[in-house]
Image 1 (tube, rainbow over the protein chains, first blue to last red):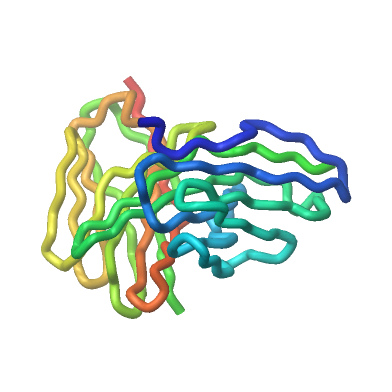
Image 2 (cartoon, rainbow over the protein chains, first blue to last red; image 1 turned 30 degrees about the vertical axis):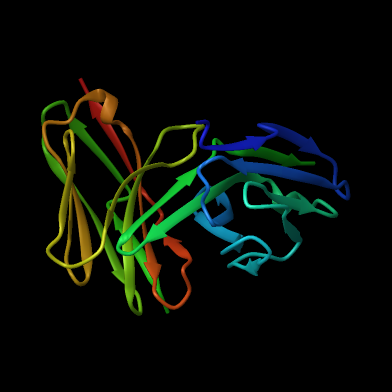
Length: 114
Length: 110
């Protein structure tokens, strides 16, 4: 049981390049999330998927697109990277039944855009 | 507007010196208050979810409590390995999304 996995762990891009961050969870959770974490800004929600086949914008969606490929996988795409997208990106999955909610995070992808 | 504020930003303790971290929140319809621990270079690690005022949960030296306006994370007799950033987040009933505070960075010196 690996939990939430993310690839790659590190990435350096040049301005204007594109890339896709991959995320997978093996806990059979319905909801998945993409966050970015910046010093002094805390964790900010980029996009989320409440269930397979649905996606919604979070707090900072500009410059990003997402795909919920299936129940396990949720990818984040940067079409034209900008230096402002230098950050640590975390994927998370969420389970909630009745009054029991838990959210688990992956190890993160550290992205630098030059 | 839903908001989460954590204090203090940083806390230095001697080993064995108990203290508390605060998480104040304003949210329309709380559907859970979450506590996480984050070590440098790693993803947040889930600790607790609290659901209603008066609820308490414990894990080793950590005890989380919840009122209608804030939550406390009490650390009893901390050890150096408790050094980390502790994050608080709330889930609002009308969105399902989590809103995070800025975190409290705890350093425990031997």
